[in-house]
Length: 570
Image 1 (spheres, rainbow, N blue to C red):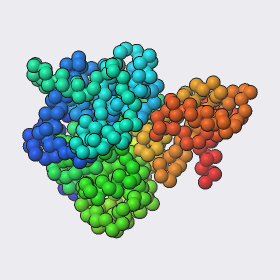
Image 2: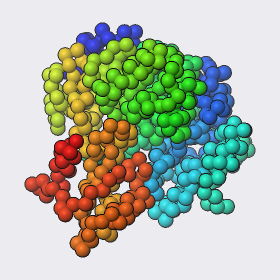
Image 3: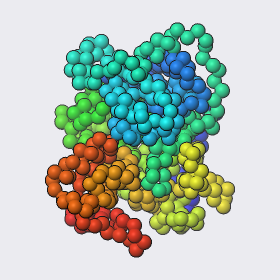
Image 4: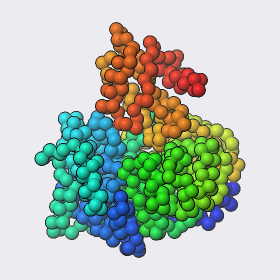
């Protein structure tokens, strides 16, 4: 059953519009319009330093001039490898201002991963923090072409007193930068200030590809997802409309989900910034800082993954805290268990909040969320109803055959936030974006689920083998390629194991080369090797040695059997 304008769930839509008029503009133009309408509102708050929309727009324009002075032009790709800091946000919109394309990657990526992303995207430059510079220095010889390294520093964006304290404490741990081989972000901005030529006119289209995010697609192999201005703008407008408490100007969002993540970038950053709201930028999340931020900053909106809300239950210093300032708490990036939702809702009620945590669903192929639990209404186990202008249907896996209500199949969706396609991969794009008989293009998510008779959507499990840990996508084939590269390893298999906190944790099964005997010393050697080549969030938490791995009838490693073995251990 595909969702239509006569769908039964419309009675649950409340005041949410069924359709939205999407401006045919760029992301920058949407933010500029917000700055014109709300000049004195705070755009973002970073460690206590607040930046108004008027100043924010000036910062974007200055960064755009700096990028032009560095030789970045329309259509060029620039990698942003940053946590949630003002420089990362400024650069994202500055690239959009000049028609360049941002390539968003995790700042904790291992050197070889960074080299892959730079080569894959053909990036002309990369912006990262000073503490990550050694990783970039290590990948120079792995690059297909020279890449201009731009280095930002946390202390440059801190309030004066806090900046001094940072320099004397955490900042002292950062590696000392060499004298050459990079450009400081502050020096780049100085170039922008000296630029005499004005910024070029804005000739970008809503349909232009403007940012690359990464996902496993339908095969579990890393794919670059090309997203457009319309994709981001539509998502933001849909999210605000579906929130149930629009408009959101003047409200504060706890922007803790990272810039490289569709959820963090699309909802945590772009959504508030087109609407005159404030992003409370959080560069690094800990349970301790979480509690302090809630009490001190009093954010009205919190988007996050399940582990973020589980941390709420473990946070200290919240006993007796008044959380009545919360207007919306949105969970995505991974499935929210029914039991965890119950615990979080009870916690909110005990702390004077009049809301419930609301679950959404989406994929990076549509930036992030595409459906959401209605305001003040929940069906147990459901991930909600579609956003305005977004359509859902359930099909028989591997086909375009639509299934009746309550039948489990592949979740497909269609709407204005659906990606342009996978970068330089028409075959995978064609497998994922398919035109059905009625003429509409549908995104085949690779996820299993069903819809009930009222059109509420239910997520079951992922068809693809991707592991999701703390909301981050981990691709087993990538990790296996790395582990298999160790001289003592013959064969490996990586799986995800259920984890009460992270939802899944990574475990590797390894068959050693003939003559190499399993030992704790070998295990630690492999873990140390992994730390050098694998991002921290994707690190195997355990390695188990096997004499051989189970195989399917066609000779492939039967990873599902390993998953079943781990489940039986519980």
